[in-house]
Length: 229
Image (cartoon, rainbow, N blue to C red; front, side, top):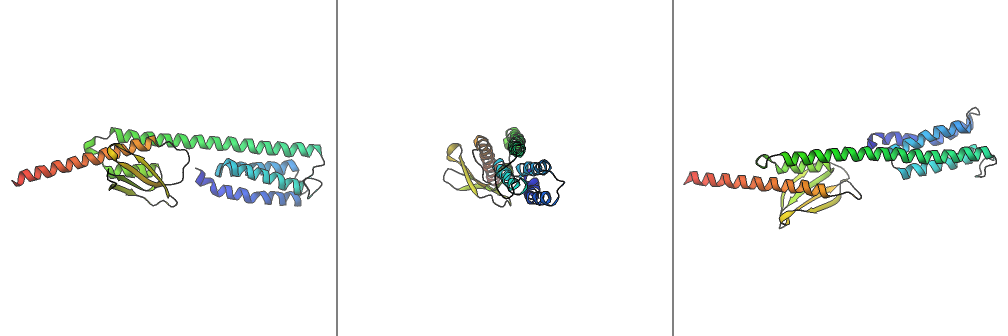
């Protein structure tokens, strides 16, 4: 969702000097009107980036407005008490609105991620071992965690199965330990403070699928040898 809003965020940043320029050129545009337009721009920046960029944008809009639109001009001193109130309310409203928007978007992202993770885990658990495909399990992990490459490693570090997908910037390494000395290793988009318990569970599912396929292959070879005798 935020990736689709990123272009609007850039446009909003460009709108800030444009609004100030119009306020300077148009005497009918009041300070309150200009600040309302700037507030909309700050909220769009918050929706397309993060709270810290939005706060910096709000402070920048506050300072630029104070410098160009509030008498005495081209100073940060404010002569009118009304202007002090308007500027203070703008800054507080911009920060509060940005915080609210980023929290709502973060909650939506967490809900979408949780739903996707629950679906992936449900599909992994409900698939019979005889029908499980380790490559498909790894591809599901790569898609869910936005990994450019994910590998299932055996006890000796040998790559048993891998899956790749074209994702630029997915270069942060992540590795979890599985049972019997196995490991799941991948390269993904940067993430901070993420719980890897589900990744471990999905990795265990991929390992079980690999072991089940190995058992099926061994059984098929044994049957073939019996036929050749």
